[in-house]
Image (cartoon, rainbow, N blue to C red; front, side, top):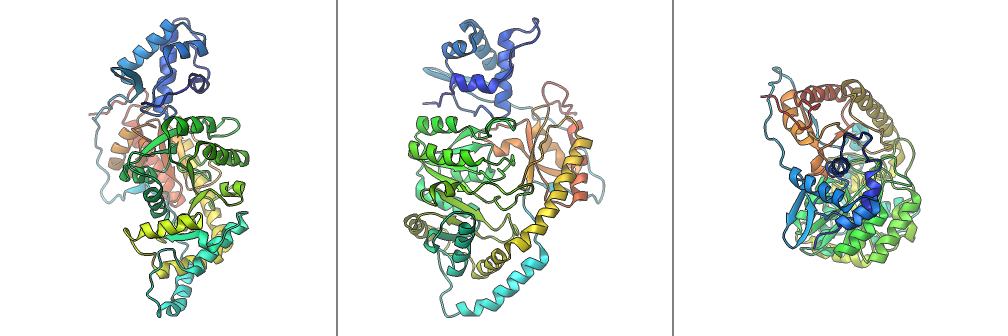
Length: 480
């Protein structure tokens, strides 16, 4: 059975949709408003719209007006009808034509698909040198430990303590990156066909891990940037868990990837309450938590429960270096034991050298992160300036932290733009990569992890590609 979008929720998200001109039919304005929400990813694909009667009642319209609205959406491909069941939200087919413009000889392509930092050379070199000095102490053992070295687990537990979450060493498991941590959690906590509630948009590799375990992602759209009190729609999240019987909830509350949003303190406590009432396990991905640029985020979600009942995923890759494949899970000792047993089917432990180096970097946490934040602030400014200059009709807000921006384009041409951009010397990640079933054609994620000069050049190349799409038209028109 399809999940049903509430009439009150849809009315709220539509905002000021009513036509200002008498020449524009009401049903057409309502259809345009719903279509915009679908393209923005704020109405997930596959959900059912409210019944005609319910929506007519909430919006104070005639049922005929809503019937005509739904008929227009079906004609445009935004609703799919199935005999004996409700119509569900969909996206129409996209154009497949574009022009390839050859790059200048010798021009290097700029890759803007990875929101990952380069290494701070001195700090990483010193960390591995110290790790090499410490390594002989482990020669007498077999070098295999599925939960990780005690010295690193103790350092991670200490970091949680400093952030207000009491943590014992046996609550920590070291993994080969945050992505492995999430895959292990899915293998242990989800079965094929289980529903997993996720932010929408969200981290694309998290969605891929859900698909590979044969579970199904249930998207709950984030609210607009100016929403009060915050971006996370916890009421809709509760409804999604209840209606789908979801067993897991996966959220990124700290400098959310890709939007950069931060969940407020009260919402963090409410999130724990919502998932507990619905009987779902809450998994919080804190990979970006250290990368604040304006102000530190609120205390961790787990702090709302004094460290109990919330599973947390962390990573050294985003904070220190993408090449340092070290992550971790904070959970109950019982769950850690189950995860360690399950891990044997994938690998039998994280390399000791990497663990020792990570421990050294955690010990010098502030010394490493303070200059890194200064660099990221400058690069964030370079990206904002470049977009303002080369793409003035794109909408962008400065994220308070993280590694990327989530930009909104006037036209839904994200996939087409990602297709033509390499011919202009830049590779970008299209908005639909961050959604379920092709949403977010109006959006694109751009990281600010490259040098300021390369960021500016990348944006100007992207603007060149964007102009070939004729985005002023109602639909993308590729130049042949």
